[in-house]
Amino acid sequence: MERALTQKLTEWAESPKRKPLLLQGARQVGKTWLLEDFARRHYEDLTYYNLDEDPANRVFFTRTKNPDELVRLLSAARGRPVLPARTLIVFDEIQASPEALGSLKYFCEHAPQYHVAAAGSLLGVMLAQPGAFPVGRVHIEYLHSMSFTEFLQAGV
Image (cartoon, rainbow, N blue to C red; front, top):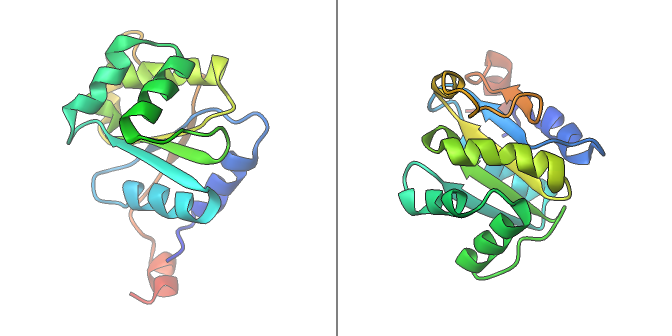
């Protein structure tokens, strides 16, 4: 299945001025599926952390804001290295952790070699918390429900 947003994700991944990606959208529109499918097609590896289903994943962000240290913690937790430009790091349901959302700023400023994507719904709630949203430090895309054209192309 091909989503219309896939081309924009490819452009994001190839951009020399790439910032962490923040994929917003309502629940059940396919944010997680799209990021996992995109990783299978464009990266050697995917490391995925759901911050809502597994609260233990939030602990990484309470220990440090340093992206290199975060990558070391993530690598240790999964038992293999997170490699710059070869591993897509996905933080799903990022609205569950203001610290994780804030970490995107530091990935942008200090570790642009890592390809980081976050997905979440209800991010408007996060915008109400002062200092939580990394204004100007993320590339935002919005995923809508599947269009009729996407539906027809998928042959669903």
